[in-house]
Length: 83
Image (cartoon, rainbow, N blue to C red; front, side):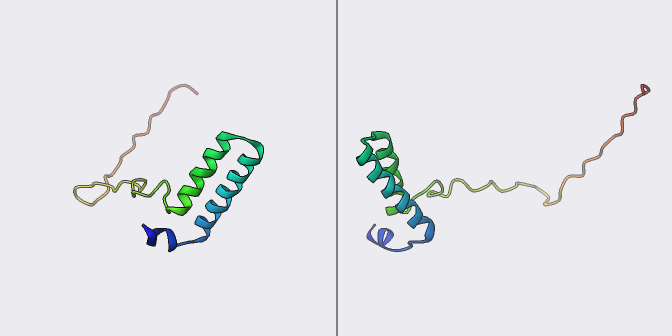
């Protein structure tokens, strides 16, 4: 846990930290509890280095093709007598 908090600080993590800290300070000044929740949420995300893809669940699913070849799609032209 300590290693996660102290290492791996990239620009996105610093940006989350700055926005969360700013939101938390402004929520105290303006007495806005909803803004405080948003600030705490962003600070927690930055400190513990978590996000929407923390569990690796937002990756696109792999294609399951049996033969490895793409299916050939054939189109048929439809003609109309009306013009």
